[in-house]
Length: 359
Image 1: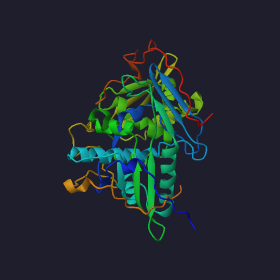
Image 2 (image 1 turned 90 degrees about the vertical axis):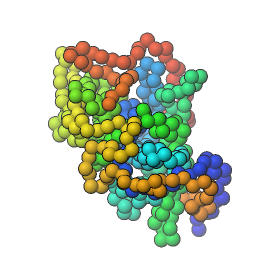
Image 3 (image 1 turned 60 degrees about the horizontal axis):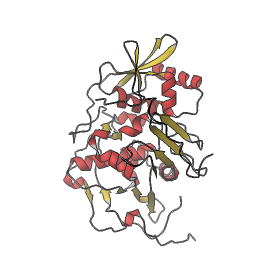
Image 4 (image 1 turned 120 degrees about the vertical axis):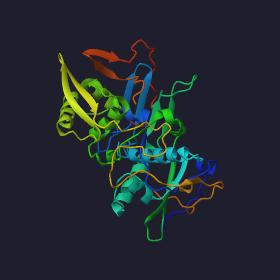
């Protein structure tokens, strides 16, 4: 018989729950997550840490051996949560880091199936998101050098009597929540993003949306610099092959990829093909570029999203096991000249001490 545990004091007991009850909405992504290497791009388990440093910007990501590092597919959970929060904020509703929703809402919102296997994959994704530890200097306070957190600080799935997942509670970190409710740090993305199957393709789309945006001239990267920004464990030569394949197949919705040369340097130019994508700021509806059948624009009324004042648990007391802005780290070429915002003269920061995971 499964052991029963009384839930101890947690963040959920101190936060008002934000109950997600909306229909389909346009997806939004958080800018900081779109260009830095916060997630594994591989479908195989990764425990090798991501260690990224450019100037005074640092990102370190550690995955627990039991679950591995959170992947770019797991990040769909965070994109969906961010989208729900932005939609509610646009409607003038109160939001929270503590979200309640059904697995069906989440899975259909990111274009997934809703079979037993998909519910199992959701549990595994939540476990990786919680066990992954991130340390970063991005958006650090005036007197702080870094912040450390997990993508999900708490999660719980309630199962019905037949064993099917009936509800989910998650708490996202303050760092992510602040980056979502600040409209200048959020961008609308094409719902077709969720149909991209390759890790590098997904990462490239987010880079394209963040840097090239709606600029007619797009944005150009040196491929070696892209390799560094991706955090990929591929050899640079293999990574370059993957970029060339992407340029040949053109998988990104709303963007075209061109391989160019600048002397001995191999470059990737990203050009927007659909300039109808708007930034999230001041747009409550009509954000997005795709007409994908699985995900559309929300027409939810004010009652679609809401918070509950009392902290009333929905689950039994058991734990179930488990416009482009400044581009500070870009490496762009304009008219054959390198334009870089990286600042090598910034004072170096001592390496983070790992949180006890990874080598």
